[in-house]
Length: 314
Image (tube, rainbow, N blue to C red; front, side, top):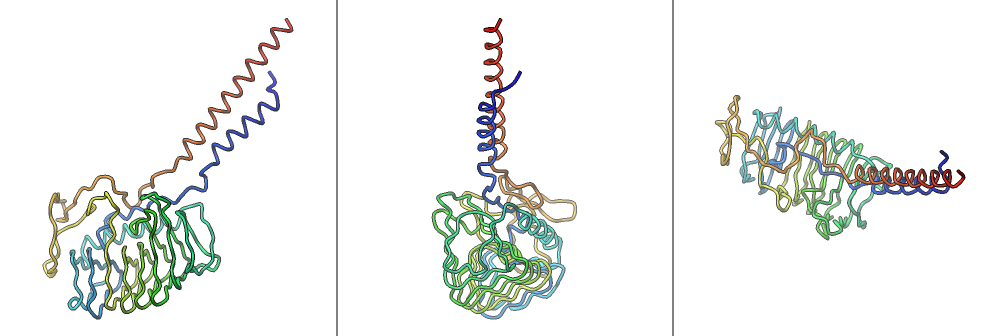
């Protein structure tokens, strides 16, 4: 049986359209695992001067030196070189790798100031990002819209710069994967989760709605306000939030906790992505399936037409 060429071409065109639509899909949320609980997490040291206010947990591992609290304040728990901080670093590494590996990626200019961007994954030819003025992130009415910014080297914001979220965009769904270090300028206003390979420095008065998470190096603070972002509708905590060590003075929330063998506690929170797990997939698979069904249907129609033609000849 020979399928008429016009039928085959049309079917393939439909299948291609269905299969490829959305292939440049929006980025998927990066699971932070136990690092979700932290507003600040570092590898070597955490240093603060001034009246920094941290809403969320503070953690350090494998380093042991946290200075400047007080005068700085932490509303959550402080985990220094303990199992919780160590696990958070493991989960941060998984999150960093997840963000770095997400595709497709749109390459844009290094300077983000003055831009309005829609959900997706972005990098720059120069391998770094800077913000002077205002960067606007437009969620396009989708509260689950995800933005991922990937740098091979640095992230730098100018003094008084700001990241503005509009049309449903949420700081909890903005991820900055930084290949070396991040520096936020004086009195700047920043939104999103910083996942830095090395270090993060917040100069005087820089504020963050999100998280400041550094894998290997230091977090340096100076009279900042850092508020851990929680997506609307999400639970306020995720797994692994244990009792503070004996030398920790911060309050500990042990509601709904389950003790594990190593003495840590785990708080089950359904519905939140975990580090190292596959992110929620887009609708590409469904679209491809529809395309294949359309192709199969077209081939079936062609087969029926050919059979009728054969019977007519008889």
